[in-house]
Image 1: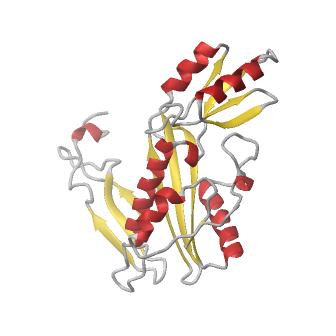
Image 2 (image 1 turned 120 degrees about the horizontal axis):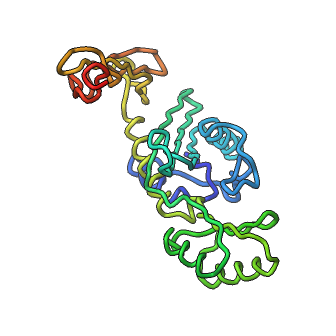
Image 3 (image 1 turned 30 degrees about the vertical axis):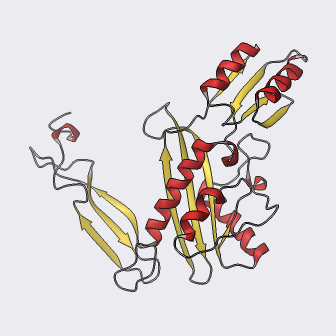
Amino acid sequence: MVIATQHKKEQVIAPLFKELGIEPLVLPDFDTDQFGTFAGEVERKLDPLATARLKIQQALTLSGETLGLASEGSFGPHPQMGFVPADEEVLLLMDLKNQLEVAVSKISTNTNYTHQEVSSWKELREFAIEVGFPTHALILRTETKLQKGISDWQSLKDTFRKIQLSGVAVQAETDMRAMFNPTRMKVIEKATSLLIHKINSVCPVCSFPGFDIVERKAGLPCLLCQHPTSLTLSIIHVCQHCHHQLENLFPDGESSDPMYCDYCNP
């Protein structure tokens, strides 16, 4: 299995797959920055899943392998919790031989993703300490200059002083590339565990892997009034191979707390 990465994600992905008897490989000098960069030098033109698929397709073409894996991260406000910063990691496994794709998404608020305009070494130093520098690298940028992967105090100070001489505003950012961000690496590791769990979920009819939830139906009845709520009533699994469907009722319990009911708690 080839892992389509240039940012050392194999450090947390490979050990988990080795436990399954799969020996991952990484292509030397494989360029994933061509599909988009966090710092914005290259715009990501597709959504995370489609971008991960492009990475795998190119890695499989170059390697001659038939089994590949890629991840793609996104950072911004949490989709449910507003301005709380979040890291979403999408992992995709592609098996050409069996025409199979298995994908997972892991959203975590455990991230140091942030940025700040700084005008003094004191401000920059405080920002750096707050985001976990130097174990977590930084980026310094102006409108015309960009320095990534700064991971020691002397380099940070020298780069800042040099940029400051030009008299322009300096923005400090967390470097979110996996090899420079241990916190993100932990999220990728958790997403990998989710992916392996999904791979191990097999169809009860044909035993094909990746028997997955494709839909969650709302309508769980309220405990007091029995009116349907927005909470999950059932989940539907579908096999990619034989298309067998299985609906499981009450995955989270048979009734909803009235606090989630629009009638009891309007």
